[in-house]
Image (cartoon, rainbow, N blue to C red; front, side, top):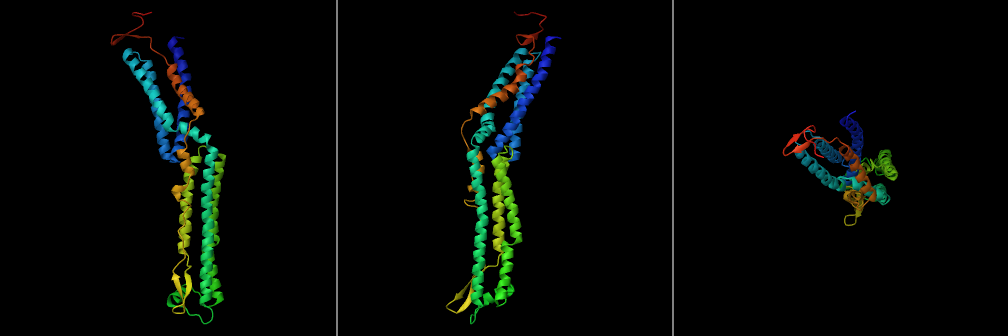
Length: 331
């Protein structure tokens, strides 16, 4: 078997090694960049594929230049320039592409988990706030209605209209029927079912973060913000639909009247969506990881292995043109 045939056999093995390196580069860059972006998968995929494709192109160009049969001197310059370009490319790609960030995040994962727990607790707190506020509002409306129907008490036009529109008779039974309807609307099975759905999502996120599923953690960081926003919207909408006015006795006219059309509240997670910390912690954690440095070097050695063992032409350059070995051999 000739020398070139042996080299080709080695190159076949080297191809596999370099492909493994490129796959590792793609995977680590994708996951690392997803931590940097907070789970923006489309952008993460674009960056990781772009970096990997550029590495593959530079590798191909180096191998082509190394094995060029014509204009060897020119291709030698291309080879050196491409190798230099690869090194220059690899440094920022590792620092800012996501690989280094991946390892820094994982080095600090226990601290970062605490931010997720705090964010999820803020979401759960909204349910507590909602239930407390709506029960208090319902009790206040019921108390006002009970005072208004007491003997010798007079209701003004606005209160009479409210009672008529809501089928509230001037009896205790009428008030109890209204109370049941409002309690069911605000805190009944519909609310409980939706709350259970949200809390199942919260538990799912919590379990994923606690088990630190590396690929899904950035997605869960984004999902925390999405769930918080949906809870805000759902609880606010329920509150706005309630029919719980404030009712008091107007001492000037001696009549009971509505002082507000509705006791409702706009619910927001503590500190606002932008105040949730888990996603920001994934994005902004900093530091240095020696393990990351070793892994980065290993990945690029694997990628360049194909170039290192690639066949190099036996032709030599004479000026700007090439001659075969069989011509003049320089020892």
